Amino acid sequence: MNDQQTVSAWQLDDDSAAAYEKYLVGRFFRRWAARLVTHAEATAGERILDAGCGTGIVARTVAARLGPKAKVIGVDLNGGMIAEARRQDSDRAVSWKTGALEELAFDDGTFDLILSQQVLQFVPDRAQALEQLHRVLAPGGRLVFALLREIDFNPSYEALAGSLARHVGNEAGEMMRSPFAGPDTDTLRKELKAAGFRKIDITHDILDVRFPSPSEYLREEAACSPLAGPIGALDDDQLAGLIADLTPALAEFTDDNGVAFPMETRFVRAFH
Ligand SMILES: C[S@@+](CC[C@H](N)C(=O)[O-])C[C@H]1O[C@@H](n2cnc3c(N)ncnc32)[C@H](O)[C@@H]1O
Image (cartoon, rainbow, N blue to C red; front, side):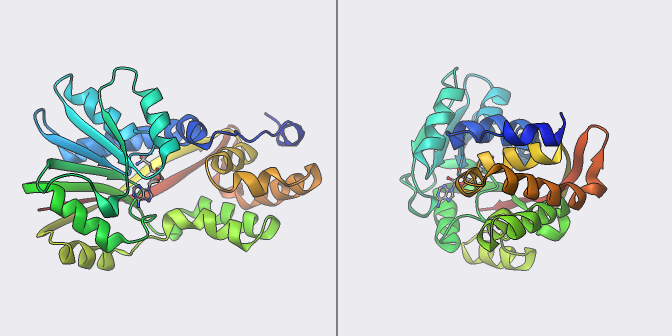
């Protein structure tokens, strides 16, 4: 696909939950969910919560792996994400609920395993959410989650954020940096200890990611986020200028088949 040809045909998806499932789950969250579930060593018979489930890829992955007797619940603040999770779960393998992690509507000790993928950096009151996650875990249970490393370890996103800041505005740049702006490792350990977790184990993981072109990388990331509005409002010349800025910024990640880059996350296991 030629980037110049794509500019005028550029369309952002209206439904950002469906776009999230199609693009970001398709490109990397599905593969990372499989790795998170393996890391958690989930076993049949465990009561499992996917906290901040989004469109439900972690819950669906663990339910498929454990089979029909799996007891899996997915909870997310965003009703649109939950609606898309239900649409994707054609086997009805998971129970889906709307709710905030800071106010979990479950009894103490309800779950043996809580999984969570790329959520805690977005939760407004992380201390309260961690306290709640600890409360709903049974004694001996574990919280296993993925949290992206800082943007220095995810340099293609720094390039994308820089181009957005120059062509859309500083707020757009900061929004693209926000998934990487979670707590550093020392802070995270302290927060988990304060919430009552007694043993913490952190592993770094690196995933290879590919998009067919710089403009498609921009389009898919934007379609899944609040950037869809401001980027959709650019006229053809402004959009061409943004892509002309982004393309050389991504040169070190570009080959004959698009852009390919590493993404780095932490996998954290915290024991009740
Ligand atoms: C990057 S998405 C990750 C979704 C999913 N875990 C996945 O792997 O695709 C972040 C999710 O966290 C949810 N979220 C953010 N703050 C939340 C909160 N306070 N309580 C519950 N969910 C929250 C958002 O609605 C969004 O679906």
